[in-house]
Length: 148
Image (cartoon, helix red, strand yellow):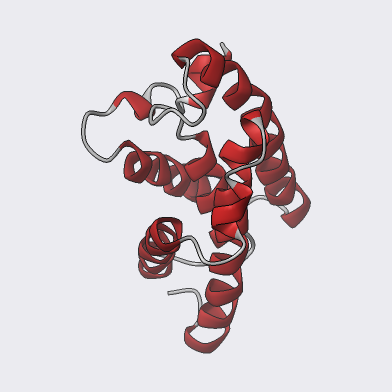
């Protein structure tokens, strides 16, 4: 069950760019939950992050690698955090998707350093930090341009 969760229901097994597919899963969850009350939206991000940390640790042992490519729950959590409470519509979510993917590749300080944390913490922490950066940009973007 932990490996299934860590791979975002198997999305991490996608043969090309599994991290991007994981981010797309995050977008789908965002659209399914964005109409919920803010406390529920925050709760979903916290739950995905918490369970993702535990599941990532199990999956890392399962795949016998520190940060296996199949583990994409970190991208799901980071993408959800990027869009959290922004009210972004389709265009805004597309901007948030591209923004998160770019930030996840570049990993501005201290995101890259957070990868060195042990187990699931290291797997999740860099993407959550990138999600915070993405959220700051998206919060401003949606305040200037509306939900789009």
